[in-house]
Length: 264
Length: 326
Image (tube, rainbow over the protein chains, first blue to last red):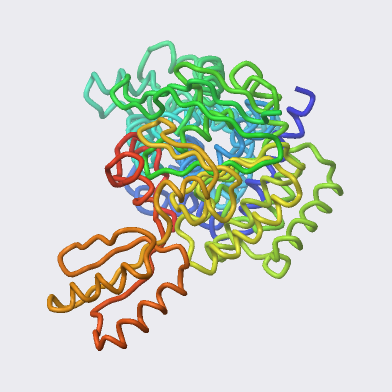
């Protein structure tokens, strides 16, 4: 047990080393969110009217931040499934290392990648006119929320990766989960235009509560979903925090147990 | 002392539908090499996975270096090395990266990990490719690196699951040399293979398994005796059959057997018998359509042990075959 930390660091370092060995991965995993920023900013930005000072991009950036960290779920799941397919997980399991280290290390690696991606996106957002108006502490808190949300989803990714096993299927499952979640939300357009049933879903959707929480922390008024009087839209910070704690409380033990019992 | 003992192992998949191991027992004497020989799906990989603590059997027990595999897997993991059928290393990383990482995971210090990695790269002739990603390696190089990774700390018991499957003849030869070198160092080795020749080259003793059971066990010589050693096979025109049979009966140790136009006979002198036969045929002005010396194959072993050829069974579920690797 005394080697848990060193094992986790070794596994995390392996993932960073992978990025150093194939820098293309790093380039493409940052290009995609930057592309989303530009597309939404310049394609929809002109036609979606808002009375938000600073325009649509102020509402858009929190949405894209949340969407990007939500994709961590798929990234973690695919990475783990590939390691299993290649027999690398078997090799790790035959070593005298602490049981949780392999999956914990992977979530750390993906979390570190998220820090980098969020930084690049923030810079891209700034370049196209995004200006948070709150104080430094609130802005830091917003990024901490984003980081934690990505980390919590990473643990669902571990579970999905272990359960589905086939990397290509994992990829599809990941998108099947994250696309509806990010679009049935207040991330890109007001929920008020949706049918009643979907509105209800969108208000309770953790993506919406995260987006609303970030908007609040970046100093915006809580637009897109503010018409609803539901508890989550009134208390986005608390709800988001609750979701994250809940997800981790469920999926960390579940995933570690699954890892211990997994055989290909 | 027995270094590995598998005692009445049973493992079924798909809720008992598929029996991978059906009461399998085997053991390996310390410092010796046991070759586990069998066709695809016979239960070789399942056996190795149980002994290497990756899989729990439904029933039965196993010990490695005297330690119970099921009760104390953590202790067993400190004593074993495992190298599988597919190179289980990180292909995006370099050979050096991989070995240093595994050194760290075996809890060697940083400088000790680097030192050990460099030693192993040197020993397995991989120093020149140490800084290249594994995915640029040839099949043989990958296997050697995979083997190196299982030797970071001197393992007491080494498991090699089909170490040469899928390699070209040169890669196979190189791998054999590496393994023979290891064996000289006195490691206890359990090796699975589909090739009789491989078991013959590397193993002190061979256990033949089929449908999850050990069906024969013994030294390579004993098994070959059972199978019948080398055979001379001559195919001739119909008119020459009688004459050829007469020639072969002078060379062969036992009665010849004719299959349409092919005469097949066990011989004990190998290529000498082949040359004798050719000379005699030439004198008799018989031109054979085909003439060859057949070494016993896995099929022959199975044929003589079970009366059926080593057919591919479905005992190991498809999902276990981590395919896609060449």
